[in-house]
Image (cartoon, rainbow, N blue to C red; front, side, top):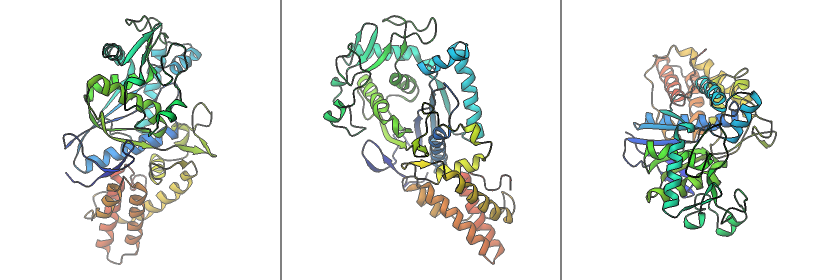
Length: 395
């Protein structure tokens, strides 16, 4: 197992050596999709990044257990099901199948286990009951709220002061004790006949759905939690408050890693804005390798724009043209990946790793010694394959 990987940790606000609790085991969780509709390429940017990170961790010798939830209990899912005139669970089942197809098409294959939230509602109820019993939550007219004033570290992940937080109230309601309290249970029946709780029929709040999935499977502490940057507050902040209040153990997560937004024409890509390009639409004109290359060519903490897709196509085709000159997948001696590793070990600098592969292939094309040229090309092909981009596929 190789050492040296450093990742930017959102909680600490700086780069930190990646040190799992029990190496070589790495426990990793990434927030999955809400399946009211097909995933778009903005979602894909995040999922591709964490797939590439998991691939690299395995290349380094870590035994990665990668868990992802699927939000199939949600008001938006129920509304979409009503428009389609089907039961919400039937609708979400169809959308989960399409989501899985999209992941396969994007060559995202590192996830060890997918968990629909609907299978963990009883766990969410149990956690809400425990939080009430410990004095961290309260019931109000069939609702259950987490009392954020009882959690002293509220706001640490998002680096917000009490004054900052006072300007960002959550879920405005006269039932709440405090502006930042958030719902653990809602007396809203999103699926007819489900779910019974001590507070009546209803559904779990969004934030507790994640701890209901992760704590039974990964335990009270795990190594890496990922997701899009927009989830830092309040979603991931709420996860920390729930988990650490429930278990009494901290830190809940050792490394918090977040990707930035994908924009189109200067606006955030989102389903609600109606400017989302679905993965299926994108794959009609772009290959999975081109999409993966495009999103890995931008630092994961920076905003990206759809214009990156054009340059990705040109670069991938150029690299494939050179790689194809040097034979099949088993040719060459694979060469050194030292520079590739140095790039990725520095906060997963995938743009620099891609640049290295491109330069190496160009050097191979100029190299007069055939054997050395083949070795250079093979090392570039191998590095790109670690990131899930195949330079020999379709060449």
